[in-house]
Image (cartoon, rainbow, N blue to C red):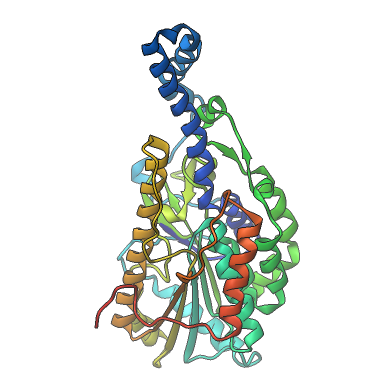
Length: 428
């Protein structure tokens, strides 16, 4: 994972590019399309055995040709990827140096960045009483596709309760990356958060594509509708406001995954591998231009707080005082087992397996953040979708499901979020 600081409008535009594929749950549509093809092949083979093979022969030949041409089709669009020796030196043209950081690097966090943070907060605290030099409130939002409606509801309900703090650090992955900029700017953007998760449908997010189109560029759906939607929500005024808050020593981080380097990058999120097309970022290294391929930040982490190499002790040392940090983690998903009868077919088995894998990864990330919190003396709090919410989505972005889940999160926020102090299953 790579970490990027949202400092300018152009940088924020890069974040928006990453957000164009925000919804992990869309993997269902791709797998279902594969499922129809797989089932057609199975029916064809069965019928062949019953003496009806001729009727299915054209379809089977086409499928065979497609499978044989898979690698050639995907390779039809060559790209100039960054050579391995330059992966850490590549920079986005038009910016000052070091706007990005490997999120998984245990190298010491650059001192100059901490000094800049301290100086910005010190200056801002003289005119803005919300900036407290000895306190930091951090919010981290996980991925989850349409489950992001839960986090959206919690945040807006939290505002209604009158207890929502101003967040000094906000991070987001996948669906959480879509919420993060609005949560960062505070209650003034609650209406946008609500509308973004209660008024959309599948048609507002993606367009299904055929198998041949998927083979040609490696994705089963186009996110053009989401791009149009983001154009309406991400305004110049909003980007200016984020940049202004950055100058006060507040930070917005959004994570993605550099697929070439196989590393997490905090920059832009997200593009679900194989479902939505990856985001290719133009970078320069050693005087030449290359393209980095970025996909869903959840490929590496479901949630994150700060670069691996940064500790609260370093922050205390730079600030010349003990900084009290409160961490709030909103897991846009469940952390408990979910029973479902899985059909004995490849698509259904694969879908359930991937879903279980994502859940296990998310739980592991909650434990990782808890370990960091215990190490650094951070006040740890997390919340996830409650077990008594039983409504099932009928499509990747089922509007009825999202509105109900938003309402669930809103009521939890309005009535006082029942934050959990330890990760799921942890025994003291």
